[in-house]
Image (cartoon, rainbow, N blue to C red; front, top):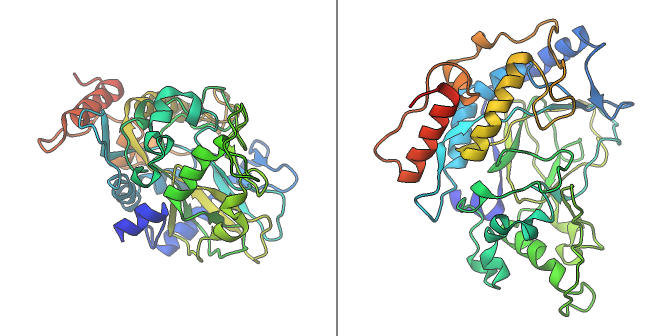
Length: 371
């Protein structure tokens, strides 16, 4: 099973949170949005699907739920570093606060074509980021390890201040379902060939798609500064996207879907179901310096109920003064700690590598003032 997850880069984990609790998250979000409708923002504006909400009780409870933290821990432990001195801890998930989606039946306006996040040109342009893909660029793509974090922890994934860029390293992107949703019902599509699609992406600029002959110029198909890496049948014809992009299976409230940070993914062009397609976006983000640095900014935003640094309106009023606002003291100790809130740091144990110990010390010092 673990080998299959590493091969496919995508996994559905059932019953992470019990069905009634997860469905209740959706109901409370709707009540919260209705109670504060004059200030709640969502897009697309004429057919709202993604809500600019970050600090609802539902989101905070889901992120801090013991089963969610255990799931993130499990996913992060699929990763490793080929250098034991890499300052990263995969056993200690940090929280990245993202938005939520409630996509109504019949919606055809909220749609995302095939893409991967984490920048576009940066994969070639940033020296440290490009080292992630050294084996591919050497022509040894079969030896490429998508789960080696060694060079990712220092990679610059946003050289152009792109809209929607993520300041944290996400090992896996993911969402927790709050509804029953199946294929063609506003759900997710993925390309379950992680190593192959990554190799093709990195090598695509160096050959002509029609002749397959070398073509060394300044063209990087689907890569535009300040955006994600995009795909279509013209720019990346050999991926055969119509065939290789497959829908995730039917999910129930409480199921969690995760996909590797280099996985191609898209969203149904149209929601053909008869119920809301509702999710809370919750990735798996490990403890490393760049993630801790962002966590500190995010913590300030959280305590002010302001949108986080990566999102529209950052630093603004956000959800301050909303009816039904979250009381941070109601969040459990582990959930608070994953947010960098509270007084209790992370434990350092003897079985940790030197790099992991240094990562935990850095987090404890920056978040909790521990020497």
